Length: 82
Image 1 (cartoon, rainbow, N blue to C red):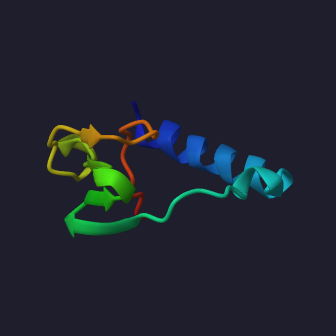
Image 2 (cartoon, helix red, strand yellow):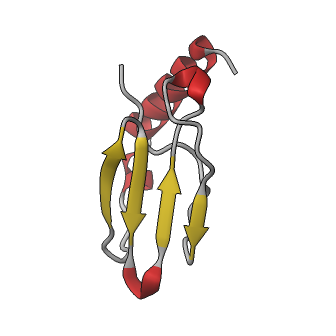
């Protein structure tokens, strides 16, 4: 996947959510997310829910595997930086 493709995908999501703000509003449980190292992120939620995500090495991350336990979100990269 090229950087151009990733950039276009983020722009498409931004445009869609700007046109459909109701899609941004969800009532859900609280979670805490932190950037641990480089682009690796860790999110913890209620009942032991855990998501650890990193970008591939080719995109500037550490290339670590994704882990998720009790999460309802897909394990894709959680941090996008310019």
